[in-house]
Length: 303
Image (tube, rainbow, N blue to C red; front, side, top):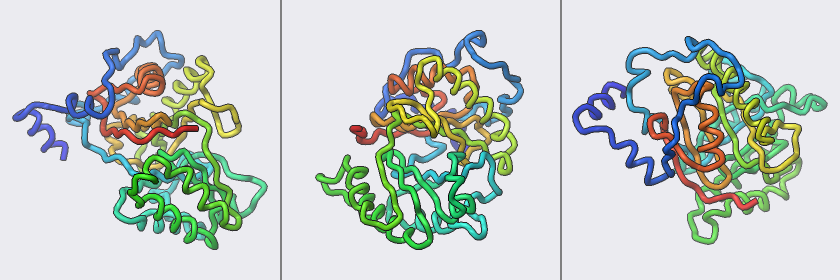
């Protein structure tokens, strides 16, 4: 695929900038800041790419999801197949995620913490999921109620009627309230930043993700935007580790969901790009075209 994109770009030219600008405003700021503006020190070699990985056009090397299901596991690394853990309901989560009609649904596990007071949570027999770009949490999914939960998600996801479009999150919350054991509520953060930390799958991601998160967290703290799972202040930015998202050869991959209506997936990122991503993408909804793998607009979440 990289070879074909390189050949196409050489023959026809790269029209990525034009395509992206139709979806997301393009920033005129430099994607890379001066090293002196970084908050942490890091080895540049950890982010060096070789050959076509460093040069092939990135746009359209990934696809945006209509719905992204993020499952809390309390871990920062997982088996090669993160959803194939025996004696858990992770395989059920994947199975139901893959059967949600014609829409493209992505599923990842995250490092979000578990309820350590509940043995079923610790054994991953009871799970919490975050649905993006709906910004909705569903907590307490078990083998008993998972079919009912996902049946309702499917109905809402695939309803294209005008009165539903843009209100999926609120409709889903109303539908799930009656399911025993389920707690469903609105997420209060303004943005989520996802970083692949799946070392077992690819060592590069396991090295780069913790470095990127330290820089994001530090800069977000300076802006009073840093939020973790124990912080109930609204309108913050939460940075999470996830398992393999595809394209580890373009590490570091950075996926951003903004509540006001954008999803942007950057690649070939380093800590030198964190300032741009926060100031231009998170706060002003703008992209740097050379580093975008995919992007979409969605209906803004109103809470």
